[in-house]
Length: 194
Image (cartoon, rainbow, N blue to C red; front, side):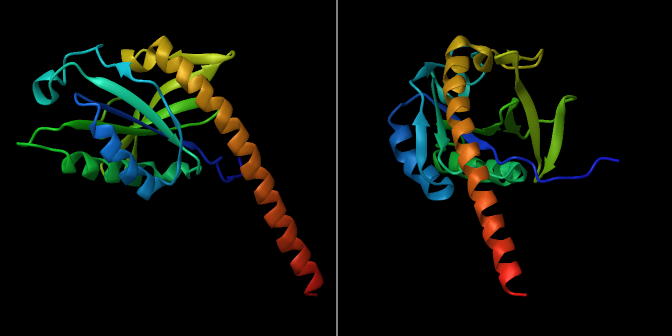
């Protein structure tokens, strides 16, 4: 029998794409208000792997990926997606989005995205949201899966996520040290209280 244990905290990663790059400057404060201080922002990536969004959002489209200093509980992803969906609606005009926001999280072993679309490889996590295993980290690099969207399998994305993973490893180490210190203080307090 396996013994359940608390999973690692995760690095929140939010990808945004839009036709007008100026929108990003308005959205960043809204994201920081909800998720805390931003610690990394990617260069702009051309979002040209599909024309699926052109009718709604225009073209060309540009993607930026951001991460946050505070680590998150993996179980919070559905709630985060719910919030980013509301933000997308705030930038709608004539029932068309100006902005697409894809939240997800990174662990040392994988990269997960939240989606409202069900599919065979996606796991339901509540609030109408599914977790999509987008990339795995094996043998020293990210590996796409047969269903990984081409933009997430690009060299540009892999290079940025490698940097995010290095930062996450440092963040996770600090988080574990703090947790141990808190546990030591609590244990010491209980001992002295006897």
